[in-house]
Image (cartoon, rainbow, N blue to C red; front, side, top):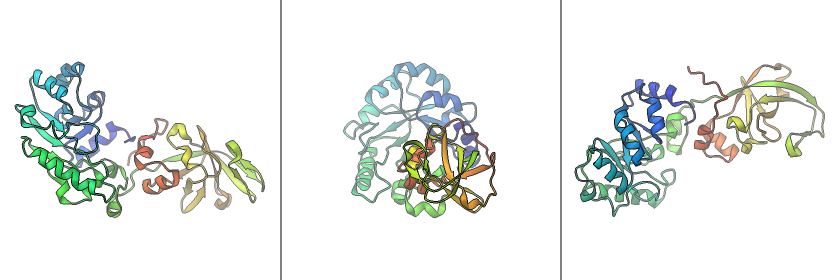
Length: 307
């Protein structure tokens, strides 16, 4: 989720997590020296070229198609997970494909599906739960898993044997019921490169989307959409220093943004650091981006400092 898996995974392991999910085999390989490989599942499944390195690595494939099931069975049929598409129409076996005949003989640890609209109170949630449970009745698996972060808030019926929270682990709030129990974990900071005094009537930034209406102190800071701080924050984002909040004025550019620091009363100078307002639910509202995009967009120019 943009924070650095090699730093995140040992912390989650220490906290008691024992099942980890990545999208690609290269990501599993990058983590296999940190935790047991059999604790890592690869959501995007396998192709024929993946079989030999996957067996050597020991991570577990999530099988999504009859072809993937055939490949894995031909390779010996070791432990696997299976994805049922219960209604998101993305990856996974359709309910009509999820038969005992197709899956007989496989060593299925987790039978899983994924909710499409768990962040909303819609009938689709209950429909997906019903489809998944019905499909799972004929399939032998050690565990069943359906709920993502938002799905956990839908109640115990959705939690089954294993939940797969993502966003909520990293400070995102997928549903308001979870807001009080989720703490922010990411606090971006950036350095002031320059401070200038502007009088009323002066344009700021590309395309002059902001014009001063009074005399202000304008700080240019080292931050932009190349860092994952998106253009959607233009004229809506903010920074702070201690208790003081400073609005972003003008358009976010590739490497720079400008902030009105007039209420700092001259206490800030070039080289000082400002905290970027990044509480995910608020930042999503300010930018028009999803909380997921905000996290995964954080680029490598940020130094990750862990505490």
